[in-house]
Length: 308
Image (cartoon, rainbow, N blue to C red):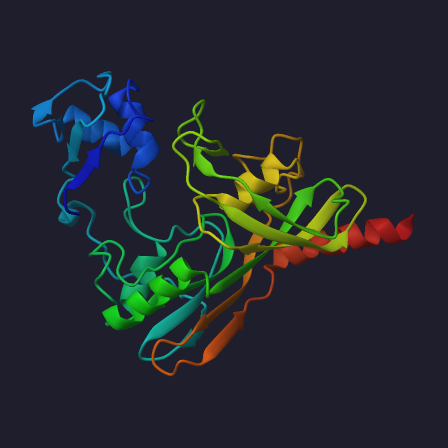
């Protein structure tokens, strides 16, 4: 990974250096950033400073990550559930518990490791640790993700995501009974000031985030929602659902209410993905069925409602 340079703005001024880095550098974990500071791989205006240093406007922060070879992505046979594949793209139905790409704390067993075993041709735009990766879904979110086999396809898909012409739809089981049939959550997301490992709706150091939702099915104490991403911020649907008071069932970070203990993880599934094929220019839509445990819980909720 190449050097990362960050110029301090007025919004960041007087914050601790470690807090600024945790907030602004999303691709590196807080613990890894701390390691880089301990090893004097982070400088401010060319000088090594302490993590507690209070940054000033126009300070230039330079981060030198360790060489990628220390986290080299190696091919692994992970028996990927391939939904579609051709010479340009590959669409995979990601299982719960699989991280998308290697990083500190997750050196292997990731989707990238599986792709490297399955494919010999992946785009190199994102480097050796994230070859072919255009977008991500959380470790415990299941469902569809597309990877690219060459740089032309990668650029095409990245542009579609940026221009919002690609569509990503999710099914989410949330706490509470949603009274509205549909709606839009337009609320910026940034790092949570109280917990830097979480995201939050905030006006401070945040980016625009828009989620559209509609009700699919209502139960006694829960609602099955369809959510469509207009933007793709970290933990976006999870944060937005918590923000409006309907946190996702089984979410370990954002579901503050007492929840079911038999969900086997957060009940969030990327069920539909639509994009224009980079070579044929044809619109393509892919679907992935709900995981068995997700469907089982929905059936239990339906039976419970029918018994009353």
